[in-house]
Length: 117
Image 1 (cartoon, rainbow, N blue to C red):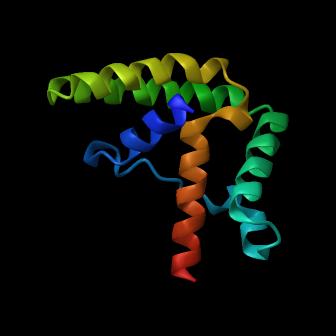
Image 2 (cartoon, rainbow, N blue to C red):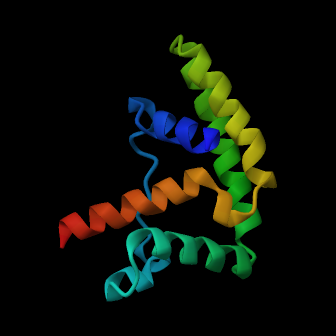
Image 3 (cartoon, helix red, strand yellow):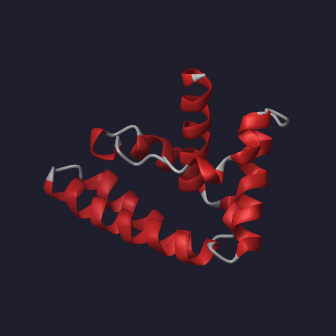
């Protein structure tokens, strides 16, 4: 729960506004509208975990978060920078369905897609 709160706070920061998913091939089931959004996000995270790409994706997200933590620190957002760094350390060790950053990014992408339709 704490990771989700940190993720929400972090992704609402202006420095993070471009952290969005634009690759709609990740969201094929979204076109069908067969599942409620939260169930769809969970299903997509499980699919990513099974595909074997989850480890690489979690490492890439962690590297990006470490870079953002540096920028937040330089912007005098030290508490958020520390939390961002803690999140970066945790992500590679979490099962993909428990990855709060990717879950939030998928949820946001689904919402944007729904609004665009």
